[in-house]
Structure formats: structure tokens, C-alpha cells
Image (cartoon, rainbow, N blue to C red; front, side, top):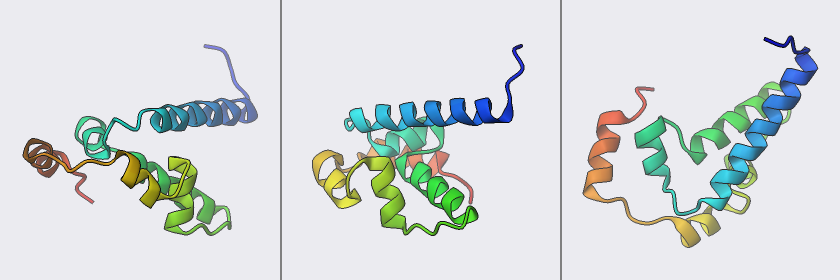
Length: 101
């Protein structure tokens, strides 16, 4: 395996993260509950992790600010454009798969 410097690793991780966020922005049809049920995380998780990382670096972000960074728009606007009511099947799967935090 090629040895990466810490700077290169951070650069590549940031590029992969930007690509993931861009992909999720393009796929507004994919509901957060489906992401949670399949992968155990969703856009809200990413925004929470982003806000926590910023806070650890001494840059406080509100929940709304970090969500807007991930969603590419205010969360309320994203919900209006893309969020649908969860089906009973989705809700049941979430109850089975939801994080144990």
C-alpha cells in the first residue's frame, strides 16, 4: 500500500466527504429513514458529526448551520422539497435498526 502523509490522507478524506455530501444532495429522493435503515446513518447524522468536529476545533456551529452545510439549503426547505411521510414498513424497520445511543 502506498504510504500517505497525514496531509494527503486528510485531503483525500475531505474530497471523499465532499463527494458523499454532493451525492446525497443530488439524491433528494433517498429518504433519511431509508439511509438509517440501510446504513445506520443519515444526513442529520452527518450534520451532527460536522457540527461536533467544528466545535472540537473551536468553531461553534448551530444545529441549523451544520444542517445547511450538509443539505445545501435550510433544513425546512429541504423537507418541503424532498421529505415524504414514512411508511409503516419504514417506521417498523427504523424501530428495529435505530442507533442504541
